[in-house]
Length: 160
Picture (cartoon, rainbow, N blue to C red):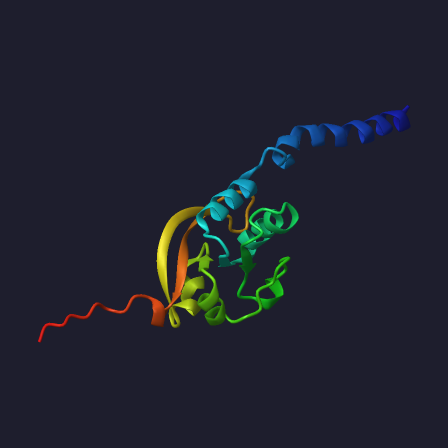
């Protein structure tokens, strides 16, 4: 009889725990990744290259590479190891910016510091972004990245 009771508990307990916690682990209604991709891709012009960080890159790469959305756009990360995208951009960012619209999107503003020496960052929309969680728990600005030499020099006047 003890064996039967123990067997019953061993069968029922995992099922009860699973059912009690199902809503915590069921992510079938979590569409924040798709929403993020739709928002970002809608804000990028044709043939743009987006430099971004791991959390956004993985989401955007899935929608771009697997689902085939925005085939004209390319995605890139600073980190060579994180460049796991279907259409890697291997040129320097300076070369990319000469030929294609270049954009940057990061959840942490200081991640843009490597760009600031060579580029002007023109602020675009503020977007909700993921950063280590399943939701959009941070915010960042989608920047148009323009080489300093082409970013609208100060106006000159012909006055003496």
